[in-house]
Image 1 (tube, rainbow, N blue to C red):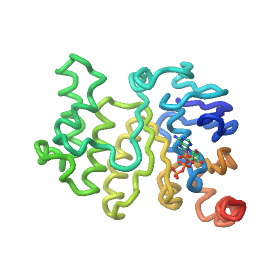
Image 2: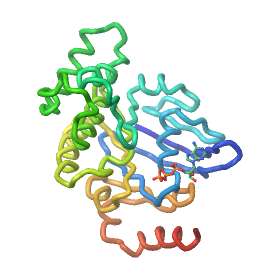
Image 3: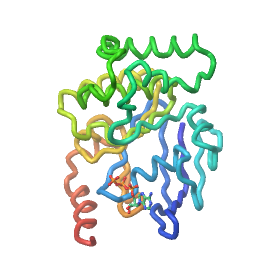
Image 4: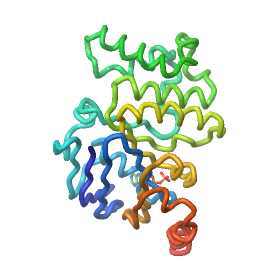
Length: 240
Ligand code: ATP
């Protein structure tokens, strides 16, 4: 589904990604782990076309999308759920969902149908369509952010920190909804600080350190391998 090959990215003169390669299969959840500043968010930005590559190649469903615009990438079915609050706080829940459906252009019927389908997965939002998004709780805002990302019917969802600042019970609810989409073939790349959580939902994980992939493997093998995790996280901590 997604193939990232040998990607380098620089912010101005500073190189932050070094030869990053990642693969995601159809209906697969892949976790991208690592300490602060390891480059995880930059990998997502590179895939979304928000930052350019200095070298490497990205293909999506066997089509080369290297250098494609963020809009072309969204239209191809690759949607990023931004870290933090991914909603427009001054807009209503309904308006936020409509923004998520901008890819449908003037096809209002298609947009309405897509929003209706999403509301079936997120019934709590259906009762709050006219509420201003900024007045929702943190968990509800994250739910809206996820729902908004589902309106364009993504084939691959890039999620930056789903669990950030949320109570475990809310995270479980969001994961339950996410799993239902995955069962229908949606693929997910999830960036998480919360390693146990990431390994519990992902089939495979990649560990990043200072802009490079240090190792990758099936989540079930990495789960409980504190020795590996410590090696990566402590090496980063002591090397500064
Ligand atoms: P975090 O979880 O803290 O966001 P991360 O693993 O997602 O960490 P990135 O945000 O991708 O890491 O950052 C990788 C490196 O790039 C860091 O050294 C960061 O300071 C730097 N960086 C990130 N964004 C920019 C930017 N817009 N301009 C310059 N440097 C940046």
